[in-house]
Image (cartoon, rainbow, N blue to C red; front, side, top):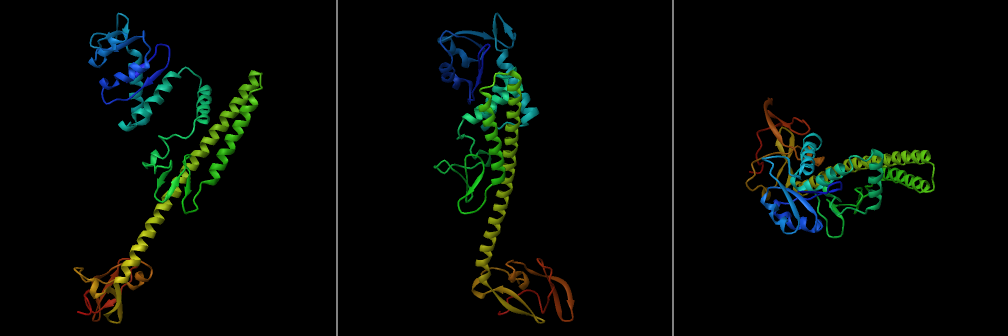
Length: 324
């Protein structure tokens, strides 16, 4: 749903149905305003508070002064943006995309330089975003304003500060902050300028520094993602080692014939497990790797092969519990 003032700004909102927008509309439109709407029954209540002009789109797009073309134009642009720019807009995030499209629509006749200045001013003025801090990782706040990432904590700027580790995206943060400080110093110096050409030159310089800081922020985010992937890989590796450290205590070294040895489950740990042998080489390296028969033989010994390291010991028979 979109409220659009003639010659003014627009206000988008998202509801599960048009009828649920009644309170929102009434709270944001001044009494005495002339409202244009289509023939949907959800807008019938507007006649109680406003002068309303209705348009039946099955008959015309504009008739007797009634027209909603400005809102239809916005919806058309948003749909085309979804196809050509975003490719997909999930329902949960529609309220995030709609205000952006609304801002673009309201400021379409403003120069690119002024748009950059406005965005930079708003970005510097605003504090942290409660909605967007940590949203792209699909994480949940822990109640203290922090977003939990495994055993890490992400601060409000998107960089990671460890609870017990040493991971920080320091270089990119430092360069980005340096650029922002330089932009702020130039902006302060611009206050006393009266020459239009000098002011324009400084404005261009500020825009360049802001773009540089944004570039460093993107680099920091990429570095953060790389470090986070590495942390996850290490956590998985540590978990596997811990699990194997406990499991390996269930095995003992036994002869399997022809002078070869292998690890097999202790009698009290076998349960319903089928007989199997583990490679001694891989066992010593913290890996669980089975010895499988190849079907080949050397003399009276049958060749088995480790699926991990490729070792091929000769055994007296197929895997079995040797104390049975």
